[in-house]
Image 1 (cartoon, rainbow, N blue to C red):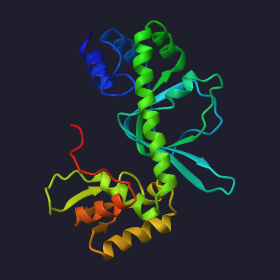
Image 2: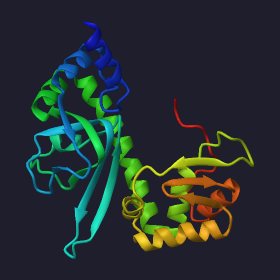
Image 3: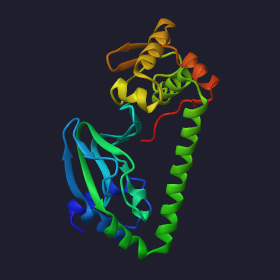
Amino acid sequence: MNDVTKNKVYDLRSTYLFSVLDDSQLERVATMGMPAQLSDGEQLFTTGDKAKVFYLVLEGQIKLFRLASSGDEKVIEIVRAGNTFAEALMFQSQQTFPVSAQAIGDVKLLAFSHNSFLELLRESVDTCFRLMGDMSARLRHMIMEINDLTLQNATGRVAGYLCSQVHGKNGNGGIDGFDLAAPKGVLASRLSVKPETFSRILHNLMDKNIISVKGGHIDVLDVDELRSIAQATDFCPKSIVPPPA
């Protein structure tokens, strides 16, 4: 295995979809990836397009969304670097994309053929079971999120999102700042609130001296109060812990 392939294998191993593969399988997958680049706002595919590949985001972010009959856009997911998307379609008989995909900023991706990856899976029952376990866990997480989005109020959802971005790195009482992962309008759609509602909630939290907002940067001034608002609607973890390294 040459140095280039070793680096690719290492990068792939950190991706949940490929983390269950052994070294020889990872080496094969590393040769399957077809590179692609998108500019900000460029569309990768549209709802109903034939799905013959799935993708891994290397740099940037991909917005997955659907358009309602009214023309309103509903953001289903924001896929960040290191994550795959559209892989579940390879197991369906009718393989068409159920959403559209668009670049947020400049994006680099790898595309993987359904047929090539399925051929690899057919060679190992153990790998299939490990992959099914990981995908089931991801599905459970999405079901919990749908339940949260359906049952909890808008302020709780926004507070919960802000809470999830705080990692307590400055300790109790310190100011913890972060940049929003996407434009405010995209995040509002992702949280199932209207953009004006999202802005109003941020202003309300600012008026209460819980946060301060400067453009796309947010400083959390009162972590405990933010958690209290989120936990009142059961939309924030009980504790704030550092993210995985």
